[in-house]
Image (cartoon, rainbow, N blue to C red; front, side, top):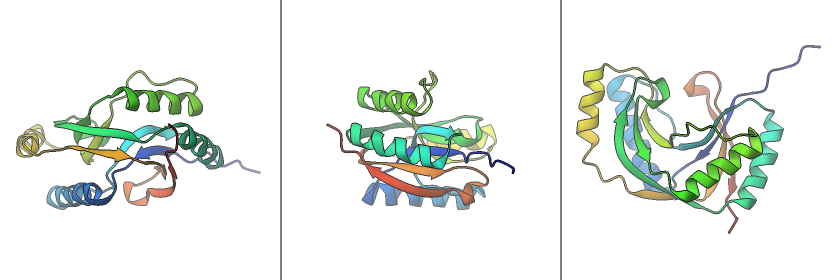
Length: 175
């Protein structure tokens, strides 16, 4: 009998309400304009987990019980040559966000990666440097603000971005 490889799963903090709608609209408009794929607005808490879906769901339920809602402060637009960080809004690494990431990583990975760069992507893909620079200039004057992440979402993030799916969310209930 052939064993199936675990799915790639990620834990996301997602804006809700008006902030979600505003960011989702911007991501959709940029994707349409640039010919890239749209996706749900999110800040990855832990990405590309390769453990069973059941283990991740159970661990995330426990994380949500232990972690308090966290304020996510959106700072400035940046660009890079990495596909999933093509154009993004950098997130301030607050003490609460850093602790949430470290705790989640220890529960699921045994060690927190030292290169955690919290961000909210606006575009996935590869853009010419002049296009990226122009978009950074165009968006740098936006008031990004913040949102309170009240839930951890578990996403299946394997295959095409269009195939990614939200598998469930757990309310952050810790103090």
